[in-house]
Image (cartoon, rainbow, N blue to C red):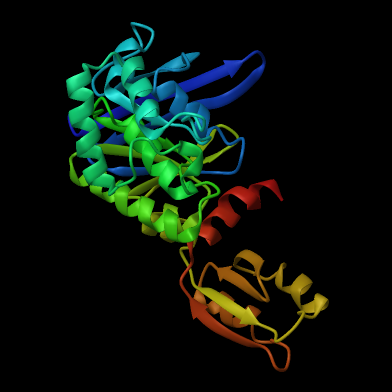
Length: 308
């Protein structure tokens, strides 16, 4: 295993009957990194994470997590990782204290140690509600922060977060990502799945998955540069675009991607000459502006574009 990697995956696959959920995936996550998985529903993100947590046994391939493998059925891995699932995993009918005591009991933590860790995690997250507070009374964002505390009670080296901010208000999502950065500042490694492009932008590197396969890997800027090596223009037609112009533009030489974004369109080309030629006949009243591609553009081209 590469000593700079918190976990390393080589040819990892898992099948359920005749269905291949994850197909020959290989990557390394560096120590202290925020590593993101991005992909549509059913792309294999959650299944990959569950294998790396020791919750599912791979059909083939190898993986080392914190230097440990699956030889013991994943028992060793479970001791050094924390896992927060995409669905809220605490109990609404228990208090904050009861939920954390239950989580500590599942990990067989010494009560004194669990109490010490609870204080440390509350200081980290800024949680200041009484332990007697019923979990169902907490706002969604605070619940997720509490769920993270429960996942980190045993002081894991590596934390897996499966769509941790799904359904949470934007302000709470921003606060949770501030918390993720605090966690990595402590030397922890965080692997997170998300379907929010603004969140994916905050990852050091991103693994882009489609139908169980890893189709791209790199930093947000590397993915943008790889998917769009040439210029991109934003087209504003001041209303619905002429259908004939759009259909003609789709056939233009050097066009890499053409997709609507609200009332505007993004058009990416292999080079500036190709772009100038294709857009020379813009309809009257329409305008174009050079823009930088976003992760949403990358996702549309590499994932949705393959499915169109």
